[in-house]
Image 1 (tube, rainbow, N blue to C red):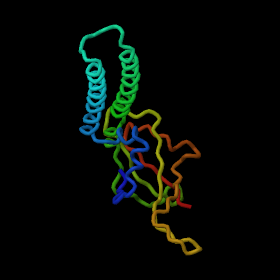
Image 2 (cartoon, helix red, strand yellow):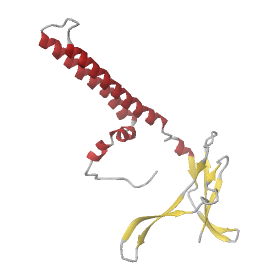
Image 3 (spheres, rainbow, N blue to C red):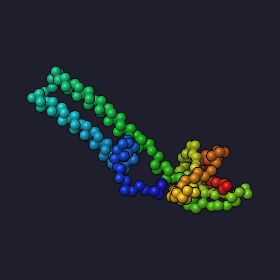
Image 4 (cartoon, helix red, strand yellow):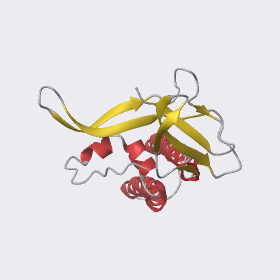
Length: 186
């Protein structure tokens, strides 16, 4: 996880511009609440419209000559299908996210700078705690530090990619046991 937390976000309306991702990122209890409310609100909305049509006609009997009822039924079916697609899509994405899988990948808490093959290297270990292994796992490393440019601009979180074998294919891991990942220091 990243240890940067966003606080005091003033433009919270931006979360509503991408409502699908916002719903997927919600905690499970809130996702289920929105799921239940989406159906309950649409059913209540259309139930009130059905009642209003019957009330305006002065009867609650089912007759075949209700043209507005047919149109309303079509609208209800279309909107219901859209709500179904949206909510089932949100739940499917939420269920299929491998959030807990990342917790079983462990990294050494300390990195080492040492000589290997007569080159100075930054090395750290990575391992997988599970018996079921990740297929086509790859690794990337970044150096994050503050930096002052020649123009005097201060960059608090400057990110630099560290080469851990992308050019040679050594960044592809098969984590059957703990592996040592290295970056040759230039």
